[in-house]
Length: 473
Image 1 (cartoon, rainbow, N blue to C red):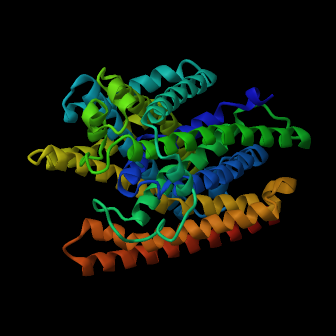
Image 2 (cartoon, rainbow, N blue to C red; image 1 turned 180 degrees about the vertical axis):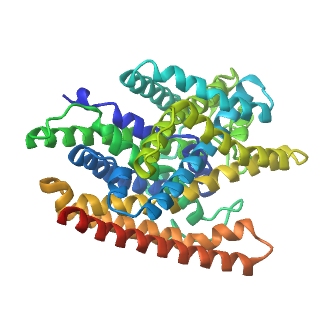
Image 3 (tube, helix red, strand yellow; image 1 turned 60 degrees about the vertical axis):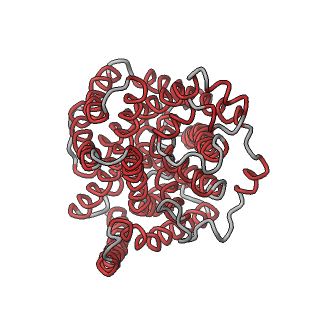
């Protein structure tokens, strides 16, 4: 029975192990050892809770999250939330562009700028996939996930990590969300926000609420609906557990595979070079395997697979929010092409601006762009999870399937905690862009904080009023 409902969870889980997750997890391990592995655990548990609510909303209401929000809000707010979600998709796509371009550069020695342009051609891959059918796409995605999992499990197993340190790292402490000290321009708080943004991805909630409706369900039979919700939850939780393991392996690899202080380039380039350099690896067996070049090649292959997986789900999500919020439909290839062309621009600017600098400086700039794009996802998150929580708490919307008291409590705790962390982390984020003008950066941060709070209040009020009006009719 579970196999009947499996598949959507894999498409959702892809977003939790894309190149953005790689960057934030590996960099977090390099900079703070096992400190941030507790953030990966907490983020994964929150993701499971949110994806449960997302699938339930789609199955019970027969509407995706974008459609449900738009039915209860004004056209103006719908457009604002659509733009915000599109920016979140673009932030994810920036990480995919960088990951795929670096993989092409490492595997085939293609110049980085040319590799960035080549990533635009994945629109043709998408065209091919749309012809083979949805279930086959799900199967392909699951295969690529298993490839990524196997590669990193193999590499971490060879590295013989500090298991005691890993277990201790799963317990958060007062340093986990500290704003100091900074290592390579990153504080634990900034690293944690990057992991949260990369792990609890806002646009994935829209996707799951849509694709959870792809299975045949008799909505006149409550037991059939309950069965669909239960098995969809199992499907997503199993796949998200795999994603949690992959992200934990990435962080562990950032700590355990390399001798402390030997690698001064924690980017994908540095990791690739280190995996083919026996002299810098922390384990003798790992060093022997590295001599063959297998470790570095496997790393690049997994990076490429991760980027292509996310291409599929990113395009599906874009279709869902465009149709739901503004009732507009585009061919999938056109939708993909527009998103990718827009995402390529900041990557090309970053590569072009650093061309005359050292290789390490170029790699750091690309790494920072990727990490900052993931932090933006964390700021977009409250505008997805608050509507999701309000809708699934509603008796009018969900009937007997509304959230129980425990889910409500955990949901609001998650919303409040994530929103608070985002707001207190914003000043440091702006400071990193304007290090020479702190007064201006603090002023901009203040304006953004006020703007975020006002937009959240606007969203909550419209959803509350809209829900009442919809069901009074």
